[in-house]
Length: 400
Image (spheres, helix red, strand yellow):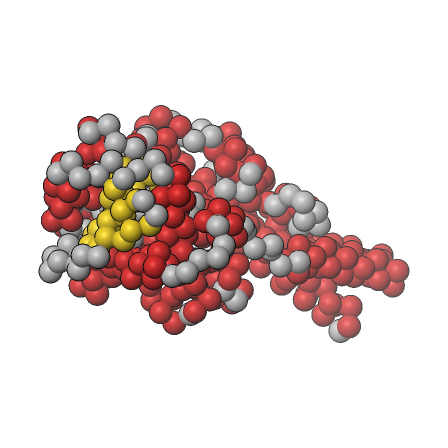
């Protein structure tokens, strides 16, 4: 096995009849991109493996796909958080590009471009980013999830320059890792799905390709921070087949039951409160209903106002929230976002400017696409707060 060089670390491992050279790169380094190009042009390799999943690969080769997304499909299938996170990560990339004059992931683009020029197969060895995010989300305690999401948005929309510490983290891992590094260092439950599992996944993918026997020598381009973990997994005795490892790591943990049960419990308590109020005194019953409508609808409308929604969308939030909160199968966010989309249908230009606009805070409100996502989030948040505030108000009236 070869030892890492002083600049671009690499080593070679023999797996069956296939040699696998793992090159460690820095995702914000022009030198790394040049090293990738030089190695592929050397003619030593008959395949190139990259630290990309199908979604991230598609984002590189088809950068305009985001401009063709169907907003109604995004809303209907509950993909608003994923799309918002993707935009936020893209905004962070843009900040780096403007500050350092090189787009993060340039070495991956170089690997794809040079492999295609030499007619070499490109092997995608990383786990699907959506699966990684879901495993991260469900692997951390629920009280940490809000800080994760808040930290992501605060970090990517900050006007401050990227610090030296952040750059050092980017030299070790990718955009996804650097965004959550401070949490991963403090939380083993986050480190495991974000880094350790991906090391095992990529090693299993390389074993899988080696076992097929189609390639003599594979060049593997990964962030330098993954080199140690991949090497340990490639050199370790493995009793499970690569496919068994991949199947296990591709599984999405079942969601906790209480988030699904809790809304129905709240609805049952609210309706019980109404029933008790009307049983005591019709006037009290109607007062409870009025409290529910004003508080729940008012806070949902306030959320829509914060998102700078159309006046009719704000009115819709006020009218729909008291009803949707009593029917957990549909959220007020879906209703308000759909109305906002109908009233202010995004133009082709909005989609084309989406990546650029979301690099600064004001752009999230000025672009019609991102504003629809904000309408979804803020009206949902307002209604959720309103549900519990109104619930306590009803309880107070009944026992007071």
